[in-house]
Image 1 (cartoon, one colour):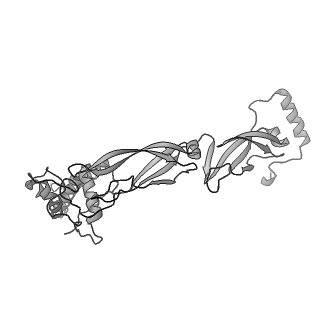
Image 2 (cartoon, one colour; image 1 turned 135 degrees about the horizontal axis):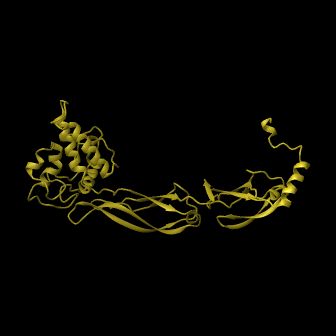
Image 3 (tube, one colour; image 1 turned 90 degrees about the vertical axis):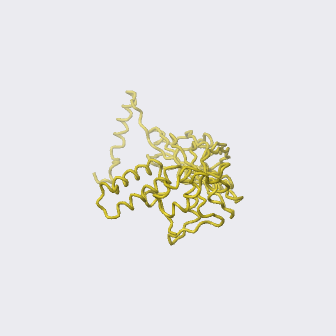
Length: 325
């Protein structure tokens, strides 16, 4: 028996949202409706689209189908029921009559038909008795994202993470449920890194081990610091006289304030490296201080006179000499 790929029938991905699935169905249903379509195979395509939407529009049916798709579909496109599955027993208890099911394919009949008929009994397995899985199967891994402030990632912290897993209820139907964990975030986590929590993913089937939870860290933008690898970058303004004469200034780091010596004749863009002041790790990063000469918004009259004297004393200096102007 050929396997029916309902996602391909609607032209959507496995991660498509319910709204995307609905939009795809409405578009294709209008396109292939026998009353308006001029294509020779419009009726068959219209049925395929309707059958696919019938399964994917319902979260529980979709979860059940995804499990079957994962374990029962072969690479050559054929369908081989997983070990222990009983033909015609279906996934769920109640909802479809024989008349309803007759409009669908043999694949749909085989999977959903018997278990959807009135009076069908339910039992263990996916969706109320059909997918009786005697072989242990590992649960699915779950992926979640966690946003952190830069200070939280630098110092480490405890955070709560909420995510959704699919599990079988007391009737064997696959249902989505919310799960919340308190997670310890180690110091030095960077943007895009993952934390793996073994056994905290979706429950296994028939006594199989649960999947894992993978948490991806996202760093929120900081008003002053930026991160490149394990290095922390900070732009620090300096006054013209500090740049010209040299000075010792105080700058912030992720670990606290430190004093930094500004060399004489410093120009904007000069970088100072603070060894080991970046993100912690086996090889801690550095903090890169980028100096930027800043001018006062207003000068005192005496200061303006001093600038005039300076301009006269340094009249042979051309800061645009490299531009040949």
